[in-house]
Length: 570
Image 1 (tube, rainbow, N blue to C red):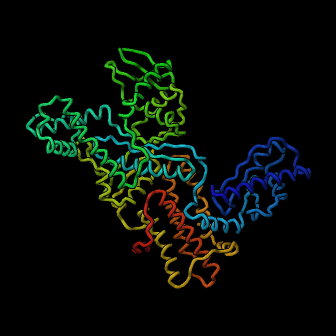
Image 2: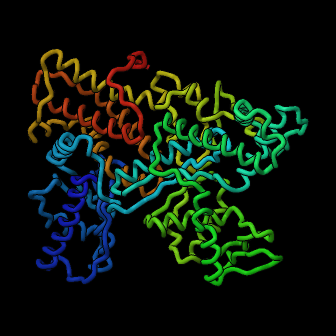
Image 3: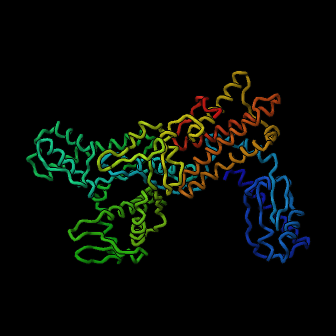
């Protein structure tokens, strides 16, 4: 929460506790030890108060009185001097409603103006080290639409965590070893040999994309048919060494265009080269939770609540794909000592997560330090119809083709409009529209409108200046109060977003902020004959712009100071 919201809540708690102490001393309430904690909550309808307290209800048993009688005593003995509380009222069976005074709202407005770009940040995370791994697409081809959602989600979650006081790093895990690389090598090899007349057909489960053909042609342009007569493994190795770095550089370039920069690009192959994969197998053996069956090494995952055991090392001596994954997460949490590792994965990994956590537990690692955000599929919609594409045929819609059609601002905003575990239809027509129906345009327009208000008044010689507390107290209309209350909630929204790993809360917050600003602007005239009121309203406008820009900066979305006005009346 913001400092002032926290302060107001602390004052409410102190007022209730001190009132109870006075009542006990006066003999109005009998002494009671270890009183239960009471809640300070925001009522659904703020006309009933800014905060509601249930102390009288939870203390009824301890004081042997009806809640309503306790509430009357507490209100009677309450001291409100030097606090943000204007008055108290009793409601229902004994709730006590607190109404904040004008100074509280004035201080909120002043606090935002003073903190500027730092407003909303907190030390909630206490500097804990968090590693967010996201996208991690196989480097065997271009990124698809699911990676686009994962990219926006992971990048914005990392930003939210950072604003909430965590030390945060971003990481891409490059799967440059294992079955997908073998399949990549086979696909390249067949396409290369086809260039020189080999009639072999591509297997159904190989990579059929245009990128594979282009890599094979590029390799042939440099090497001709010199690799045709060489051993298959040598030829495949050369093809992969030619194509894979190009794909990885392509991933980096595409993600940079998407405004994503990673602290680390971690290669799976490094786990094998360093011996970490073998070490994990040895450590799991030492844990006593492995056994051999049919010449394979199994992990007793059922010892940790999984529905079945799984193979670590096949009968041919090669580890399964899960072993380097275990080694990778052990590297995150033990070798590099991150307090928390967060993976953004597709929803199809649901059954994979418990197995990974079971192995970490067997290795002596607190599996609760690994958090996995499961992300549902995205469907692209145009003209109300779902666009269908086949990944296998090579006609999948990629991140690049999406960004060629949709502005990056819209893509990043839209992909964070839904909670990660919800299905999402991406409306291509809406994403490119310049209307109030397009949420990112609506938010950007609110920011541009405020910039225009300030710019136009400056052209008339009216400049924004610092306001006194008394001047800011003039902001007392329902629309001004509603806007101020929403601005005051920004810090808590960031914290709640960080706690739930759901950056969609922030996009919803800023969209609602834009709505509340437009409502304020339609009702309250900023340019006014009362100079003090005009300056106070200008300050509130500026505060709104500060928070909108803080959100857009967090989401890596532009905040234009000038935009078209054609949507203003829609």
